[in-house]
Each structure stands twice: as structure tokens, then as C-alpha cells.
Length: 225
Image (cartoon, rainbow, N blue to C red):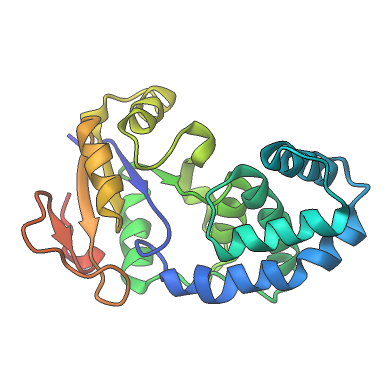
């Protein structure tokens, strides 16, 4: 019996294109000015130090900025990048320049499910970025629909152990959690951990896979729990 639903974001509840075509360019474009304006902020200082640790050498401010921009281009799932992008996006969302576009079917189903199940998010974007996203959607602020958020600090989304940790964290058996994602490797990892799974195969994001061993849907409207 399902007691909780765990959602991916990109390609699942919102278009991949929003992240790739709006959020990433926005953070890249503002990276230099944001760092130069906020370099004395302890949180930003910590992020810049972490970049140098990962690169294994002392870097100038300009070199750190270039590394972060390069990581955006490479779509690196790396904590200091996700953290600083979250801070940049925070400014964008709060100023009204950014608004998160939810799929209509995802919004309607989550609205129905929030009173029946505990809803959680697991995304490669930082928890801070996730909270911003759901606080500033095209449907308004729906952050209070969710019981919790997870990012890659709990583990890689393609490793089954991450889903075991999530189940422990929320206090449910893996089989009591339904995981929805457009990524086939994430679906396989979650299934290996014992979660119930459904792949979201939206034609515009991640098309239907022939002979895929798990259930697939093109829209949340197809999903009965």
C-alpha cells in the first residue's frame, strides 16, 4: 500500500526545458556579478572554498567563476555548483524574474494526492533550489504540499542505496513509497531498493521506452494509486 510519493522534478512535474533553457543560462549569466557582489557572504565564501578543494588547487576569484560556468555547461551534479545556483535563482524567483512552470496534469494530481499521501521531492537540484521552485510556480506557492525534500547530499539518484536512505529518513518501508521519475536509471535504482516505481515518459522530455521492465505513463492522468 502506497503511503508516500517521491517525485523527481525535471521531466516529471515540470519540463526539462525550463532547467536547461531558463535556469542554467540565468545562473551562468549572473554568476560573475553575483560572486563579486556577495563574496563576503559566509555561505558564498564556503562555496568558493569547496570549489577549490574539488579542483585541488588555489584559484583566483575569476578562475573560480570560470570553473563554475564550465560546470554549468557540463551539467555537473556537484554540491557547490548546485548551492550557488540556488542562491542566484533565489534572487530571480523572489524578484519575479523566474517562475516555475508545472505541468497541468502534475499540478492537478499532486493537489488530489496531498491530502491522501505524504509527498516528497528528490532532485539533483539543492533542497534550497527545490523550495524556491515550489514557492514560485505558475500556480503560486505550493511548498506546503510537501513533507520533505532530498538532494544529492543523501546520495546519487542512480544508486539504490540512496532510496534506502530516503525510506529510513521518512520512516517508511521502501514498498510503501512510489517513486516517479523520467530517468530510467533512477527508476531501476529505486526499484532495486524495493520502492514502487513508475517512469514518466512525456513525449517532449523522455519518450516511451520499448521493453522497459517497469510501468510507464505519458501523463499523471494515467496514474491510479
